[in-house]
Image 1: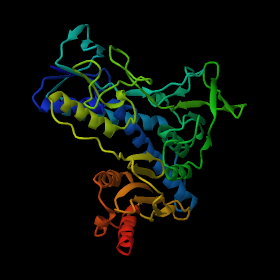
Image 2 (image 1 turned 90 degrees about the vertical axis):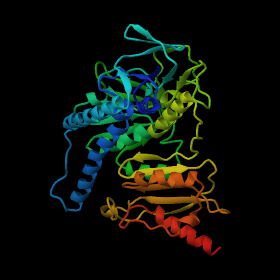
Image 3 (image 1 turned 135 degrees about the vertical axis):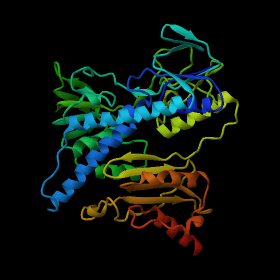
Image 4 (image 1 turned 45 degrees about the vertical axis):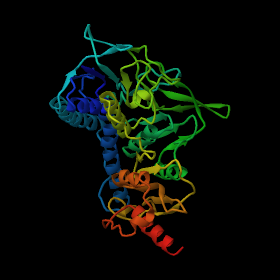
Length: 442
C-alpha cells in the first residue's frame, strides 16, 4: 500500500496517478469540508469568487459615475459567504467522487508520521511508500494582538459576516493586494501595511499596474507592525516607520504575511530553515521511501506547481523517468485587471510595451485610461520569447500558453501568421506580430 497524507492538489493528483498504475492507495485528509485543500477552501477559489463580486461592483460603479446606471451596487457580505460555501461544497463533492472512482481509498482522519511510520485513528498503517502533501497555512507574525476578535487570516475569513468599516491588511504580497482590491471595491476603507515594499519580488511593470488598480487603497511601505490594539476586539494597529510610531484606527485586521509549510504531526523528516521539507530531484526526503510534494516543500506556493510536483512524486514512486520542471512559470494577480506574467531566467532587457486595447471588460475603462498594459520580451539575436506581462480583464486565459511558448524556446518569428480572436482586450498578439515584422526588416 502507498500512503498519501493530504488531499490538496499535490496529494490528490499523486494518489489518482498511483491508483491508475494499479497501486493500492490510501489518502488521509482530515479536512471536514472534504478534499481540495487550501486552493478550494481558503485560497484560489475563494479569491476568484470574491473577486468576481468585487469586479462586478467596480464595473457598475463606473457605469453609475457615467450616469449609465441609476444606482451603485452594494454587497451583502454574509450572503456572499453563504452562497460561496454552497458552491465550494458542490465542488468538494465532485472532487471526492472523482478521487474515489479513480480507485483511491479516502480516510477522513488526521495522520501523523514518524519517519516512515504512519499513525491515524489509533492504529499504524504499513506502507510501501509515503507521500507528504500537507500543504501550507497562513504565517502568523510574532506581534501582540493577533488573537483579538476582528483579526483574520485567509483561512478564518469565512467567519467574517459583514463588510468592514475600516480594514488594515498586514502584508505586501499577492494575497494582501488581492484582498485589498476586493474589500475596497465592496465598500471598505482599506490600508495595506507592508514591512518592505508592495509585491517586492515581482516585475516593476506589474507592480505599477497593480498600484493603479489599488488607487482607492492607502499603501504604507517599509513600515513595521508593532502591535494590534484592543481589549477584546480590534480597535487599531500600531505601526512604526522611520522611527516614528502611529496608530491606524480600524475594526478589522487581515493578516496576509505569507504562507508556511504545514508539518505539524510530522517527525523524523529533515526540514529547511523555514519549515519546508527538504527533497532531492526525485521528490525524496531524507527517509527512504518517504516523498514530499506541493506547498509543504516551500515556495512558490502555486496550485499548478503543486499538481506537477504531485505527479512527479507519483512517477518517482513508480520508478518512472521524471521530466524536467519548466523554467518559466506563469502567474496572475487578480484585481480590476488580471495582471499575468512569466519570465524566463535568461530574460534580459525591458522589451516592447503598449497599452492593452479596449475590448471585452475594458471598453468602459477608456475614459479612465486604464485598459491595461502589454509587454513582450524577446532575445535580440534569436527572436526567442523570454517574458511577458499582460494587464487585461481576462489575461490569465492566455498566460499559460504564452509561458509554454517561452519554455519551448519558440521564436517570435513563428508567430507572424498567428490570428487572434477579435475583439480582444489583450495586446500580446499584436506585439508578437509587430516584433516578427520588425525582425524581417533587420
